[in-house]
Length: 439
Image (cartoon, rainbow, N blue to C red; front, side):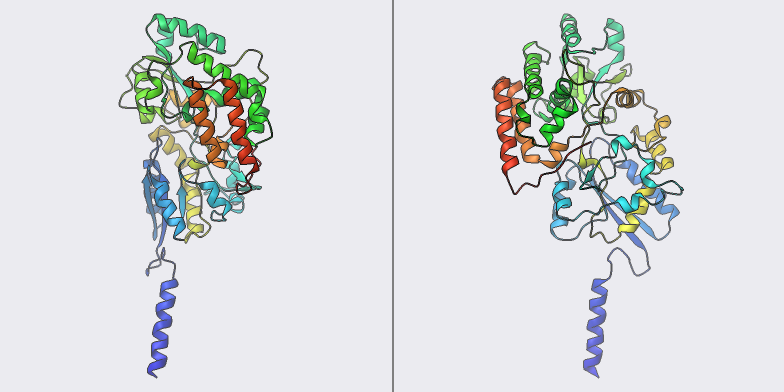
């Protein structure tokens, strides 16, 4: 009899140990959210979590945010103790965990009705920005409009000086002469973070010289693509911009907040940053500063058009781990978070823009509205930083090469040759999964 009782006790212990830890004894559900704390902040998510919990008794939305969330996520994924909903940020290898089957495909959920709507969830998003797919499956759901590499200027300064916003590279050089007369530089860029000007100057130039095809060929590691005419011409034009003195003296040794501060002090005409710039630098922006976005200028004799600015990639989207304890509950919260009514609150109160349809009218910021205008008025697709997410080692090597080019340590020809060599190494490395990139 004692043996039977002990067996029952042990069985109860085992069962209790296997019970979903996100459900407590009272039947309550806890959805664990871990997200990157960047320029967009996390308060908008925490506010939505509070209102969701008020409407859903027995549900707890536990939000953890940090600029170093990737470190915590790495530990959690390695220990098979994943949260329910994540925004991994740019430093987490989201492609790697997708390849390992650790992230759930979301297409079936997206075909369901949106929050309190008869419309399919997928149809509530702007199609042009809904491109985080792999092997035909959708894995990431963006909610915040996140062009990471826009050019920004002060409309008041331009109006006061009688300057026109440059539409071509030639007009940009003419503006440089006018700015110099006023003791101002054209660009203040974060030189110690070359990805800013690689994605903000170089890749747009590749597109303008060679169109989307030139950039797609390079992203997809086609043989010789990193030595194409567009790649070389963009490198030559980049070095010319340095030689013509378009960059603030010392700018290649400063970080992004320093560069942005110089810009808001009107020491330079343009800054390069994402749609989070206004919120990130609110404490230093002068009251009379009229922050506006523009598209990167066109080039003479180019095959491409003024395509949309390069966007941020996979790191800023929402994902559901495959082994999440509360997958369905996380989806329900994400539907609520991305609902039109809730997104409008975010847009109005936090100064963010969204990829959710019908939320533009809620934008209170003229700066943010101008950024959306750049996207809407440009031709072609909204190209992501796909190479950074898909082939991070290759991207890092080429970004470092571009910094060397801008510092004058290598020639444009050497840049293209070495970039192609790095691409060839990746192309021939059987341990690196090849991805068909498109947008």
